[in-house]
Length: 158
Image 1 (tube, rainbow, N blue to C red):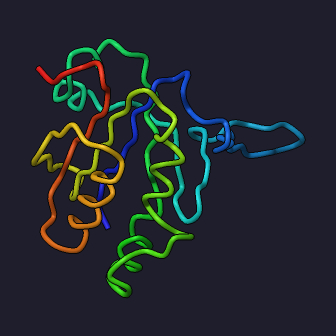
Image 2: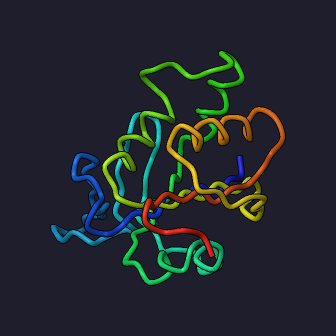
């Protein structure tokens, strides 16, 4: 399933409970870093990444100046899709909502990018975590819509 799914979070607010680790390859007793730092949350693989330039042009100006980290959801959307298809909803133990609450719930501001086909933004919305969850699940099950969601109480979209 070709979907771009990123979480942009202030660098100093990424939860330490995710335990991001640098993957490495060891050869002849020497460890060589391999790729970006990674973490897992249930069936989701999260990977620190660079922020796509075009995203920042679509969000409130104050986000453009912020020191944000990009956490890409590199695996797990296909599992989410299968669970939604078979059950019509996720189980509590393996929910997208739980992952979003864990990663975003304690941050003062965030951006979530969800792009089916990796190239489709249909709406830019100020939203809460529940709305992000609901719209992503609906996008997977019904019509494929791309979103940029953002939350920051003190900022308004330009």
